[in-house]
Image 1 (tube, helix red, strand yellow):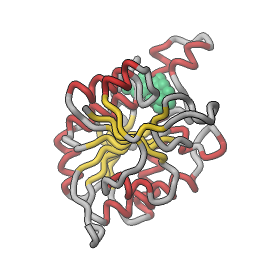
Image 2 (image 1 turned 180 degrees about the horizontal axis):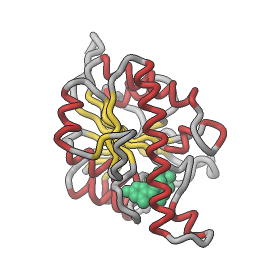
Image 3 (image 1 turned 45 degrees about the vertical axis):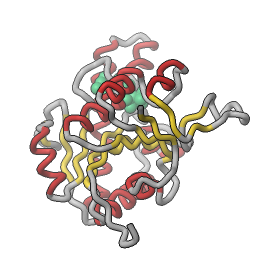
Image 4 (image 1 turned 90 degrees about the vertical axis):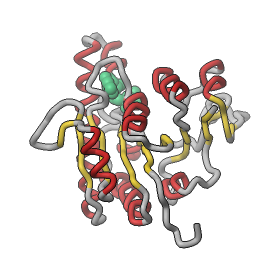
Length: 240
Ligand code: UDP
C-alpha cells in the first residue's frame, strides 16, 4: 500500500556468507549494520520478522568432515558459529532502536533465550525481531531446514531466502555460465527434479509438504528486504 505499512509475519533466512562481507570468514560489522537497517525499516512499517542466519562464514560441518573431523562434532561447531552471527545482528538491531531476542536450539543462558516457540510468537506480536540460533540443535541438518521448520512452527506466511551475490534461481550457475536463465516462479517439484540450488532437499520437501512458499532474492541489494516483505516481484518464488 502507499503508506508503506506492512502486515504479516515473515521468516528471513540470511546467508552466513553474506555476513563475512568480502572477507569470507567472520563478521563484517558494516554488512551486518546494513542488513539490520533494512530489517529495522520493515519492522517499523509493521512487519513481524523472524530470522535464521547460516553459519558458512565460520564452519560448515560437511567441509570439516572432509578434512578428517567427526561429522557430528563439526556440525556442532557449525551451529555454534551461527550464534555469533545472531549476536552481531542483535547488536545492530538494537542500535537501530529495534528490540530483538535471540533464541538458541542449544541452551546458552548467558547470551540467549532457549528456543520456546510460543514465547517467540509473543515477541513477534510485540514487534520484537526473533533471531533463531544454533540451527535445529541437531547434526546433519542445515539452517535452511531450520528456517523452514521455524517458519512453519511460528506460522510465517513465506520464507524469504536472502542470497549472497545471486538474485534468484537459475537453470545453471550464473556465476560460471553467462547464458544461465533466471526463473521468476518455480514449483517445488521442478526444484526437486532439476536439482536446482534453492535450499537443501530436506528444507524443500518440508516446504512442499506444508505449502510454505519460498522467495529467493539478492540479500545485499539495497531495499530488497523491504521489496520482499511487500511482495514486489523480485527474485524467484517457489510454490505449488
Ligand atoms: N548445522 C547443523 N544443524 C543444523 C543447522 C546447522 O548441524 O540444524 C551445522 C552444519 O554443519 C552447517 C553449519 O551448521 O554446515 C552451518 O549452517 P549452514 O546451514 O549455514 O551451512 P551452509 O549452508 O553454510 O553450508
